[in-house]
Length: 76
Figure 1 (cartoon, one colour):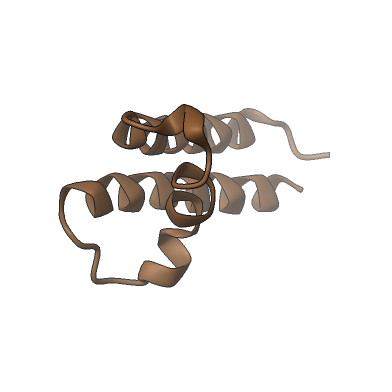
Figure 2 (cartoon, helix red, strand yellow):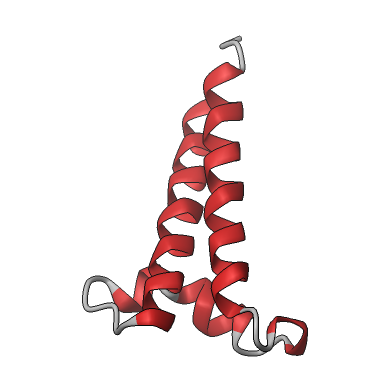
């Protein structure tokens, strides 16, 4: 479970950074995988209109928090 949380946190971190980069410049590496949150959620939810970069950076911060929390959980 701990490794799954770390992997999920890493994926969230990478997707958030990739989505923010995609709004600044075109993301050439793993665009389909790393921009899934950006293209499927951010662009379709009207609440994120105008704050796309902030939404992606928030996802990256949340991913970092999940990774830190997974590192602090004691193995059972």
